[in-house]
Image 1 (cartoon, helix red, strand yellow):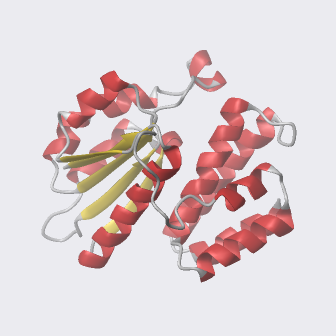
Image 2 (cartoon, one colour):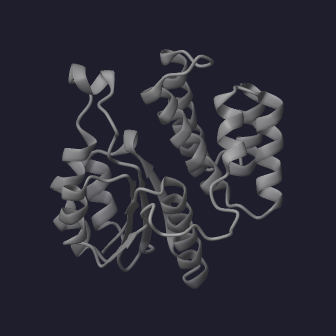
Image 3 (tube, rainbow, N blue to C red):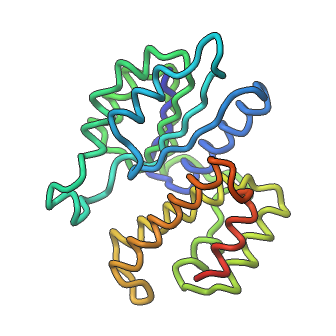
Length: 228
């Protein structure tokens, strides 16, 4: 089953999606949680997302994080990577029919795509600019700004403060990876194009290593911050 989070208020869309995920995991502690970034989307990954689960396997909660790029990357223009947008759309029926909870987090989703996915979704949550902001911790601006500024000390401090305040490490990782992709797409005086691409790949590897039983994700984020 699909749960769609979208709208023009990027910060609020991301905050509400992660809040929903956190509540779902509290409600069903045995739910296995996986976050898939755009770069991890493939036919095999989405088939696993739809079909995994059953008598001997836990039901899954899968967050598909920002699968639709605001513009095409150089790799996509060269045709070296499959189009994540097309891959996801091909599997919408399969994901909608799944017993697993599939959360699609897609800020600034084009109206046509939003309508197409909403038609398959069990629930759709829309947060547009016309909706007043709520007072909450929400989007961690200082965290993403520290990464954008390439400030090792500031980023390490922000990671620790956010963890101490109760933010989930998965949420912090999601914000950092979102910002890395944002740097790739918009460019930066601090991060060269190839450096921001390597930054994105490093964050993907960090999460994958943590899932495989490596260093705890919280500690991995601290180590990552100090490695900038």
